[in-house]
Length: 131
Image 1 (cartoon, rainbow, N blue to C red):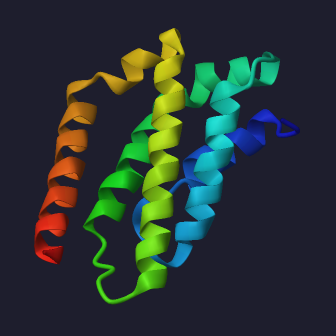
Image 2 (cartoon, one colour; image 1 turned 135 degrees about the horizontal axis):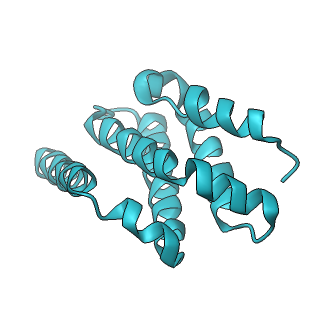
Image 3 (spheres, rainbow, N blue to C red; image 1 turned 90 degrees about the vertical axis):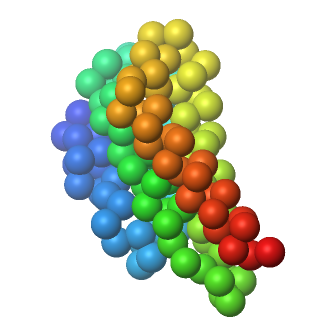
C-alpha cells in the first residue's frame, strides 16, 4: 500500500521473473502474495495498479505456475513444499483476479487458456510419475 508507481513497475517487470525459480521460490511466493493484495485493495493505488499492471501480473503468474509445474522436486520434501506453496499462491492471485469483473478478461485469452491446460497436464504427468 505504501508503494509508488515506480516501485510497482519494478516489482512487476523485474522481480516477478520465473527464470530463476529454484533459487527464488520463496521470494516469488511472497511477491505474488503482495501482487494479490494490490489486486484486491480498494483505494486509488489499487486502482492504478490494476489498470496498469493487472494484465502483466496475470501473465507472469501463469508463467511462474507453468515453470514451477515443470520443476522436478522428487526426493526433496523441502523442494516439494516450496513448489506447492508457490502453486497455491499463484492460484490465490488468479482467484482474486477472477473475483473482479473488470479483470476477468485477462484470464480468458487463448494464450492463457493454453498455458493453463499445459500446467494441468504437467501436474497430471508428475502425479502419474509419483505413483
